[in-house]
Image (tube, rainbow, N blue to C red):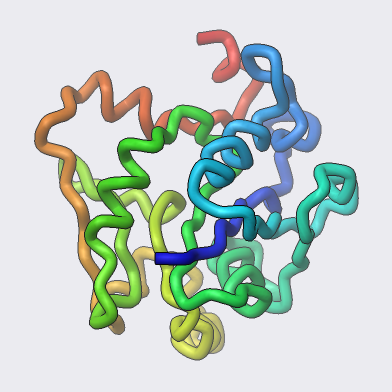
Length: 187
């Protein structure tokens, strides 16, 4: 199945102190981990950001149309510019997401669904998963209603949560580790 990758890189990076997408981590910018992972699956990569300093990466950069400070706006923008029904959403600050996880998620894609994301220990990870392009209008309705959380979407759409019962708590913590501050880069 063909899909587009949408890499979210639009946060303010206030806790990091500089654009976290470009902060070096183990020898390369954080965003490069998501780009490298996405390239294993598709050549169609969009970077969703309002930061102009990501144009040099060689991928289409799309800006938010919804004026809300939430990942919902970045996904909306990516879906508007996507040429495929299914879209893999990754965030620039989770460098430990693996090909194996994306394989699991993509194996669960079904035409009857609109969202497929991982779930572990009662937590949903909406910043790593698949979103169907037909969600554009639902996201706009949610935004108008003041519902900016991606966790609001499953209440309105057919979705599937993929559990990870074979992974330990430690493996899950590493997989979904989010880099928000300079101290997160240390280990």
